[in-house]
Each structure stands twice: as structure tokens, then as C-alpha cells.
Picture 1 (cartoon, rainbow, N blue to C red):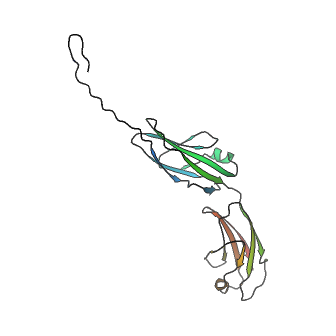
Picture 2: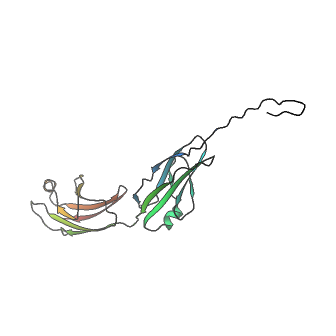
Picture 3: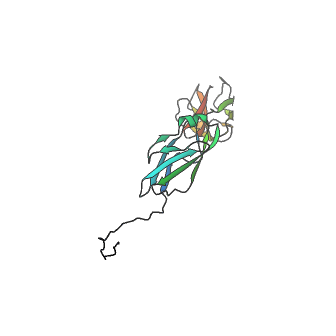
Amino acid sequence: FANDSAGNLNDSLILTLYKDTVAPSVTVNFPLNNTHWNSSPIFNVWVYDQNPVSISYQVVGYSPMNLSNNTDILLNIAIWGDLSEGIFFIDIFAVDSLGNLNDSIRLTLYKDTVKPVININLPQINDLYGDISPNFEISVSENHLNTTWYILTGESTIILFTGFSGTIDQLTWELFGKLTVIIGTIISLIRVRFTELLV
């Protein structure tokens, strides 16, 4: 209200104000925390707030990069190329138009572009075996090994094994004559490497 010395009163003014002290709600759809990548990871971050928001990610040691809400965006290629092999950290930020900032979200990711090396020690190439399935022995050079497996040519079943030695499954062996054994590794769901051997 305002009035003058003559007692004149202005028309009433009403202001509607909104109080917002709540930070945006953030869900990181991709990348998943503690995952290994052999190429630049994809980001997809979903943010909810009543007010407009600004979303960004920052690889620790680099400048922040903008993200769009709930949209797949590739990690900056220049940053990816500059990162060393191994662990790196990414912080996700969402701030609304009133300056409310989300709680800190930090992802731990691993850059691993070096392919594993698989050596088949047993059986030897062109070894001859009878009705009894052969033993096998491998060596693998890989820091982040997840799974080891083999398949026999013509058979679509992947047979998982632990460690670095074992025996070819007898029932599967009996299905074949001359065959190729494929032994492989899985580093993560997106990285597979294998070696073939004719026996």
C-alpha cells in the first residue's frame, strides 16, 4: 500500500511469490557407475525440477560440458582421447533457475582400450584326441577380466569356465569330429575377445 499526505491511497497491489529451496532431482541412466569403456561413454541424465534447469558433467581435471535432459550425448571426444588408461571420475550437476544445486553425483569409470591377450597353452594346434574330451589351459593378460568361455565350431552354446584350465565338456565333444575350439574372454558387456584353435 502507498498513501500520500492528503490521504490518497493507491489501488491495492498483490504479488504472488513462490518459495523454492529444493534442488533438482537427478537420475543418471547412463553410464552406469563402476563400468569399463573401450570407447567414449554415452551420457543420459534425467532431471526433474519445477523450474528450468541447466545440466552438465565434468570429467575431473577438465572443464564442465553441457548435457540435455534425458538425451543420449557422447562424452567429449577430445577429453576421451586425452584420458589415460584406467580410472577416471565424472561429476554430474543440475542447477535450477533459482540456483538450487543437486547433491553431488560422482561416477567412477574405467578407460580400457587395450585388448586382452589370450594364449592357448593346451591343446596344441592340430593335436589329435579320441573319444575323451581334452583338457585345456590358457593364459590371459588383462587387468579387468570378467568371464572366460569357450565354444566348439558348429555349436552355438557358450560354455563358461572359471580360472585358466579345465576340460572340454564331454557331451559337447562327442558331437564333433575335427573341430575348432574358440576360447574367449569378456571384460565387460561391451568388450569381448577370443582366440581360435583347430584340434
